[in-house]
Length: 443
Image (cartoon, rainbow, N blue to C red; front, side, top):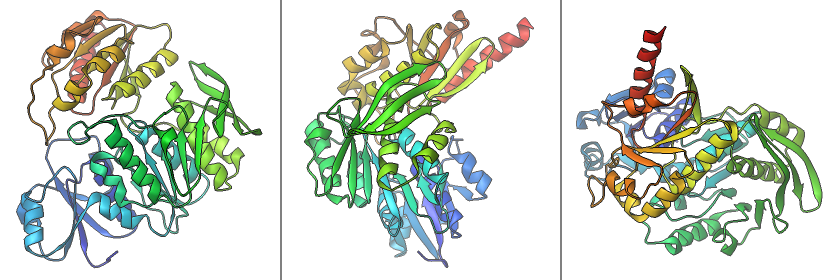
């Protein structure tokens, strides 16, 4: 780390990039970055830290910078291209993160789904007990002086997590995703197997995942779940409208009764993984119990607000397994209310590859609405549309436009769940504006 340079982040509003920028800023380094001018949910933390965010422009690149390049941008991006031509030090995000975690007890959280929620929960719990730096995929990052732990989200896309060699890894699941890169489930497994070979102390893996059960590693693999053959087990699970409670066993050793103000079976499992890691680092389990109770969640994961007589939930879910988890959580918290799903498919390749699974998972809602497919920077068109998915949906499938969200006004005292990894929030805002004006009119 160089205290004389200015670290310039190309794509600083990316969720991992903004978190990394905040960590360096906390550690006393000079930080700035560039990105699109459109507002994103990660930007608030950068503004509060006083980090300068510039519009993309090759004129931003000057002598004295160290450039950290976001993974959404290739080497032909004007800023990256200029930095390389000037022989500045240029690091890819994942490579820089791999260097940053050295010297700490590092815990990487990997998985096709559940990374951000689990990373956020682990960071919250450990931060309440010992100095902990963390990088969460919702744009949250903190660099703590003399930290004991470094908790970070390990991203499997394009095998980026192979730039990291953590002490511990939590692996929440292996599932086929990112069909623009991975050829199938075997390819995804091979990436996780390579990561397993790089872990230094131990791996904590979900026991119900048949792919994770195939892992071979030089370090112990501890399985967590709800079955007899799991090393860490949650039993006597009670799911209520205020959260979940469960007993935890490590083999035959009773580790206590834990409560979390979280919803959905997946959050019981995420909590179990956090308890398992803490157990092996000799953290006081009574402290863990206390910290779990005060967790408020992470950004864009089951984020709720009330407006008029409606409950509006915002969630990043963009894969069938994530949709299942989010709708399961909504059913747990609001068992007596109608649940309406508004889903923005994310990328053409994912929509084609998983279309039948999307239709099945969305059927957990009482009624389903779709938006047009969100195209990514890497994938701007494809031979599929939301109308193709709509044909497979039995409970609705009407396609909403941002300038006409009025079909949602037919619902009262219900729950509307907006899901997607693109810009689904603009639909959410349009609906909220409509609902607000209607409420004012009625009052």
